[in-house]
Amino acid sequence: MSGSSIQKHPSAPQVDPKIIAALMDLPVALLSDNMHRNTGSVGLTPYHKPHHMVGTAVTVKTRGDDNLAILRAFEFCRPGDVMVIDADGGLKNAVVGGILSFYGATIGLNGMVIDGSIRDVAEIAARTFPVYARGVNHRGPYKDGPGAINVPVSIGGMVVNPGDIIVGDQDGLLAFPPAIAEEVIKKAQAQHAKEDATMQAMRDGTWDRSFIDALEARCMN
Image 1 (cartoon, rainbow, N blue to C red):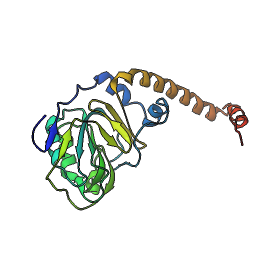
Image 2 (spheres, rainbow, N blue to C red; image 1 turned 90 degrees about the vertical axis):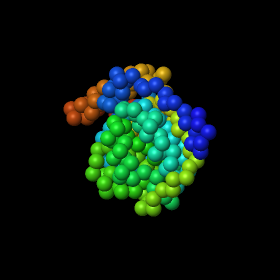
Image 3 (cartoon, helix red, strand yellow; image 1 turned 90 degrees about the horizontal axis):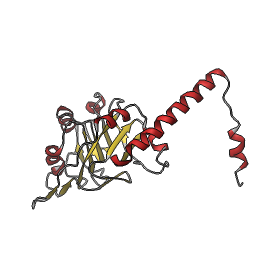
Image 4 (cartoon, helix red, strand yellow; image 1 turned 60 degrees about the horizontal axis):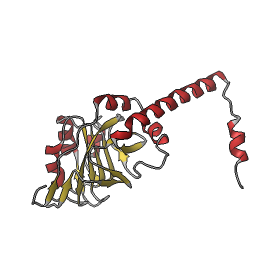
């Protein structure tokens, strides 16, 4: 930890590449269904061309109008990481734009998540490099601090710890610890196969809809 206006902590170990590869084939919705449907971020939007995002979280906490800690945090990032920025949900000043997101792509980041504002959205929208944010504002950031790197953060109501797996697609964002990844993947893959079978039954005209009777029967009103 530094004595400066930015607290600095080492980045957590990166997630096993085999787990990252397995998650690339699974939609966020399937993963969410197998985590009790009660986690994940709310209120952030993907601004890039559709592209699946999976990586190890390097977290940043900063004021909603300041990006000094973000600038420093790039030094803590490795290829395959996702920078996850808690900017207090600020909408008055953009803390990331076309230049910083481009730099993230050039150093091998797998994406950037900003609970705050971005700008240069036309530029970002032309790229596949994942950028998620709460909103847009043309006004640029201050660079005064304070901030913290690799501390627990809150992103759209979802807690993200340094080293968590973070997954994103057009439906939203989900983060969870690597310790539960294999179980979540196994369940999501099984559900994926079940849903494929259901869709085939729909094509064949053999979809069994009797489960709706049971659901309706349990209603109390």
